[in-house]
Image (cartoon, rainbow, N blue to C red):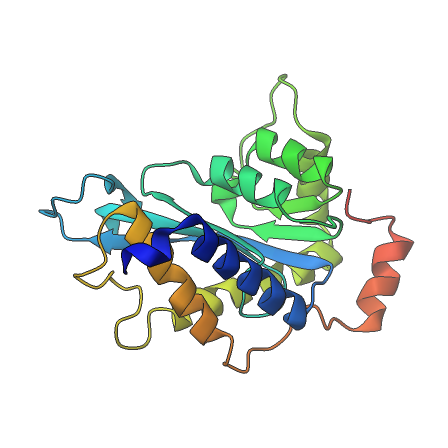
Length: 233
């Protein structure tokens, strides 16, 4: 966590390394988005940490927001205070991903019309469960992407596609299942700039796991996709 690591040149080199590692693992037409709380103690003096909702109630800290596309190295990620809305951060992440296209899978926290619009802007179809599945849609405007997501999840293809979202839980799970990981943050990792330096260290290590590639879907799924006119976007 030295000062040299915070310099612009070192940060640029680290970002280049992450992009190259992500490129080695390859992209795909299925991406996953999720957030993982990075908590600190409730009495922590860290001025950058914020109170927000975590897995088991309220906590203080940060959240790692990441988009995965098939490997263990996320092509886009961001650390934000724990109280920042997931759809807002996700919109920034997907706009930073080059290439676009395909499907982006998220849980109900990402059921947001602005986020669906942001996904469509890069040629991507967001598929997220509805926050209130039993409620009607009302009379307000809904993103075409959100309406398409609702329709997809009613179909067998959409349900099988969405099942691959469990992969991101395994990716995040590995980051917490070893010493000095992310659950919670080590005592010496405080302030936003140190957290942003610590997270890549853990994601780089996760690359060496043999994780299944959820982009290796059977060809029959692709045929079904084309037959139903379900191209991303």
